[in-house]
Image (cartoon, rainbow, N blue to C red; front, top):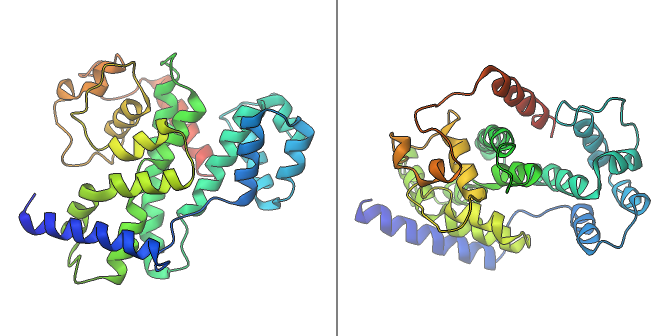
Length: 282
């Protein structure tokens, strides 16, 4: 990275921090209902009926939840037509994860028309990675499938304030290549800031902070950072700084994947396509 890019990256990070502290740029937020449901489920002191009552306070969220519950992701034998049925069938933990998935989409919407298309592109990348995470996680006994989807959806959340800043500070980010390099340099601390603000678990904060370090090594079992890195490699969104030789990527070995096989078999590809289509409903 050039000295100028390093300087610009540091300035960008400082300006984002200042903009957040002075309310010039607001960190993305999650809907109150989603936060209430997360708290209720984590405390474990609410019934399915009480969770359903909380959900019913947000009609748009409720409708989208039912759509997702009836999608190929969960292959319901009969239609799930009420919130309480969704909670009973899927369980409160999965419903909590689904609600957070649906809420995250809000972070990728903006009233700024100049940024709308860029945010949509980032969201599409998130969906592609999340769908691949879900397929790969099924073969990993230590990783939760729904948590894997969340990891995919939030991995690049740190790019949003950077793009917003670039829109306001054209002199700092004069061209797309500079934006790309600055984003690579500082999206980790920005993503950490957002997910810490959301009070997300450390396993997901680590994803936002560490996913773009494809040389990362650790002594513990495969985690969600490894999963996201492998998922990215299986999409069309591989960054140019990722090693071409997958044998050089520790995450591939942590997950027990064959570095010479870069495509899914027919069954997994079908599942991936169905998962991506279902997540598009979010």
